Length: 314
Image 1 (cartoon, helix red, strand yellow):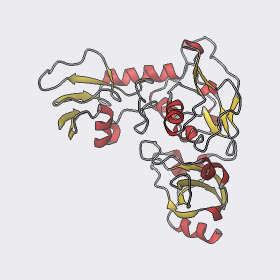
Image 2 (cartoon, helix red, strand yellow):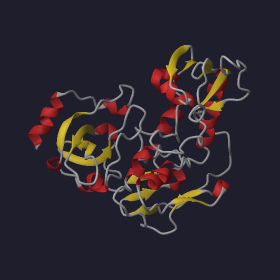
Image 3 (cartoon, rainbow, N blue to C red):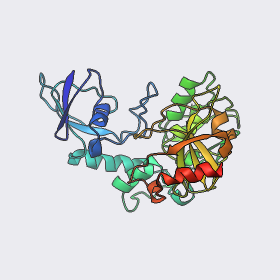
Image 4 (cartoon, one colour):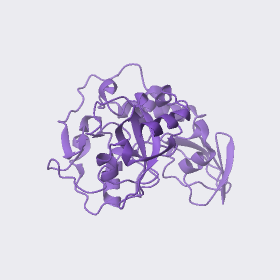
């Protein structure tokens, strides 16, 4: 076990635990943001640099501070390590810089983006973004494309976090999309339209931290804060069948995998559950999902009596 102190709060964690996961064990505002790291995807992390932290003491054996900020998602803790996250001025300045960098090419089209209200980059920009841009160069632009019959790719919004590539690579047998080209010309693509076709392809939508990959069956139907997310399940022979259904009245507008407090999928679901089961009669409603009170989705506040209303609609 190793003892680590983050923003003055100490915790003992198993050897090999990263600083980010140690911070998540503590919880609260000290947890660094993460745009590319995904605990369920091997090899993820180390790309977006939003999780940078300051290590003011390396360990008990070597108390020297690390000379540069480090990526908390890929840096293991050492016994006696002391870390500055939200309390560090260097870290806050670095996160502002990383946010500005991520927004260099990202279009500010939140009013028409289906990800608005549950977008990690939107939250990051609200907390660390600048009021106006400091660049005059044109943003890079790409044509929208259908990489699957129900998946729309907005490459303009992509921040190249690689999550969708890792997801397709690790939960399917035939990944057909990836990163094309190099440098500023890098992009997610397949070379061929509508080529992604497997039972779990829709999970790339859930892992995307921005609005680059969207559900074509839900596009422009509603804002997430006008819907009511409910835990639901069904007997499915392809996946666990445990999902979150997003209701507007008695209509199921979309179905997604359930996510934990860090925005990560608890269990990947199949395309049948996600795209084809859009009737309330297809699902057994368990109850309202717990929504963070700081989330914009909480604006559409509902209590447990809403569950009874849903049951009567069935």
